[in-house]
Image 1 (cartoon, rainbow over the protein chains, first blue to last red):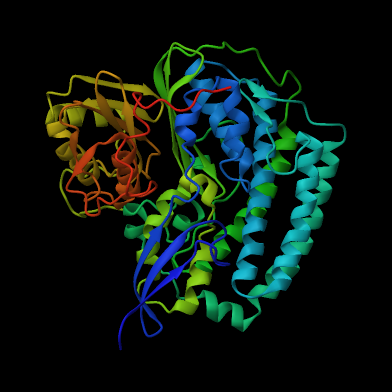
Image 2 (cartoon, each protein chain N blue to C red; image 1 turned 120 degrees about the vertical axis):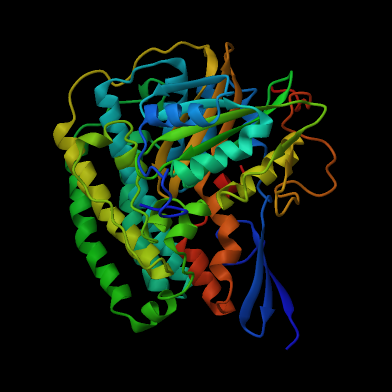
Length: 360
Length: 162
């Protein structure tokens, strides 16, 4: 049969953002796939070179609206370590709580998107409904739903509001019961399983070599989590598990993310128990010393990294962002080759695409 | 945990920071600048011609299976690339920095070693004008084909900030 080239995107429901897959098909089977990105490239890194250090925090949240708080935190952390600032203990705990809330809501948004990818609007509605509760918690803490602008260089913007612990624990308890119902909806559905299992398989060695990170990597059997193995903030103080699956298919990526939400809830509970009293923010110098610094954190999508160079001035000389999805999209061909076109939304849905951080 | 070539006799799955510095200096005595900056971070400054063999050594014998990031940078007197590679056993991240002259902006590609460097090198190539020799797919990635300037070089001035 003659080969056919299909352009999926840039406006396509599977994409969750502006990007294109140029897929070559032999009948229904994908024989080649080439990702075309760059529609959202806005020169973010260059723009940072003309901004003062604190001005980059709200810019970082625009990298990805789903995990905005993680990006702000990563920038604040990198800048702190370059400036040589020690963050107060209470601020570290507040950051961990905020990041983990952000991780749960990001994963819930991924679950909702996966639902629409598979044509299951019930999953979409349920996940979005629970996510709203977490966004309300964000509003209480930061005053914003998504682009939160909460971490600061040297701490966080404000202390936790009154009764915040009670509210968070109440939401987590509700979430865990509701979440169980949702997961049963998926796991007991033979349609869901047959669409997710044994597609988009990535082996352990491939996952390492091709730079797959985060939940997708752990679904391929690589037992590595930046929070546990290269701890930052106060992640070494908590007792939690890092879910790992061996299969490496779309369903394994799904189940790793689902399990991660429970572990995040566990971390938040422990953080509230251990959180000390004290200041939540310190004064910081305005100019950076000459030198460079690198920091990495575990984003909801995987290992994200920032490398920052100071030249003695009040703006960074160079700021490089390593976005987990930027590298994941280079695996597009590997993920899709040999599978059918109808599997494409499920495979791409399982890696949680976000274009804002990819194109920068 | 993961080894590229199992059964090699020099293979160290979980080297410490000191072991990395000692082993690399024994193998590459010309490295001018190196330090273990802090816990789980090691820094090397390499020449262009030893970069590929250093990276290959790190991957095959020190078990650095993951290339986190390849950054291009314009130092105004010369260009440069910086590689961040990590070991999944120990959580150690090594930074390798290379200077590249303006008049011959070429460096060996590490994509044949780590496929994860693929998009990072394509990005640095189009934004800084660095040529990565041996890259399997040297097309433009983020910018359109017609751009014949390198926007992330310091000589390219963006519009005035208000």
